[in-house]
Image (cartoon, rainbow, N blue to C red; front, side):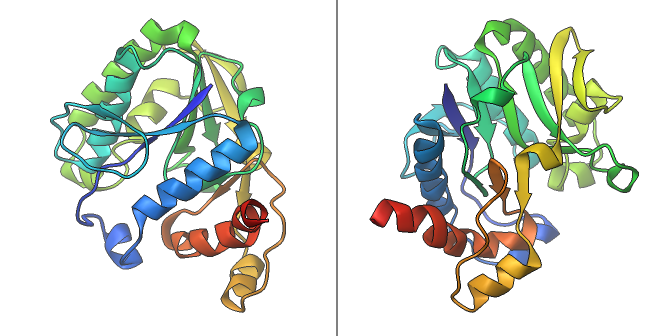
Length: 245
């Protein structure tokens, strides 16, 4: 198994990223890589553009999409098409830390984390983690080509935020937990609470006070949106302290 993480350096475009302010993505990728090595015993590669410079091991591809949202779909497609996709792969966004082996969830052609509850109707998929089976290479390539094609038809607002997820939602709907047949593939839709440990307000307060957070109870801790500010501190208090010892 290997892990890949899409990242392209560039200025903040979306309101969400501008509100976050400065964030050390290179450092986040390093923390992700260390966490994956400790939990899964495998390497993490940054998926990036052919002209981008990143400090971590990288797989670089020629890309043309100017929008970050569509670029994420494009660079994932380039990886799936490439000879580098020669093993089962977990795609993880850089703002995540891993605390358990991720192999047990890789039982389908494509694995996605979903939250089918009504309150998440507009964002039923958490697109920051996906499982890709190398045995389904051709089907995954076709799936991502369709996703990119759909993404290019979305309104401009989606190209700023959400355009990497909306096409995948369209292709795998209806969203139900379990093993389903979608887009000619076996797709495992995994309940968010089975895999994701949400950074609690209590954890944030503890980190603000220099105290250790509660140990994670799930395989992945996701630092979405403003929680990114806590990624480094959480890493230092958990994985970093273990590595140092």
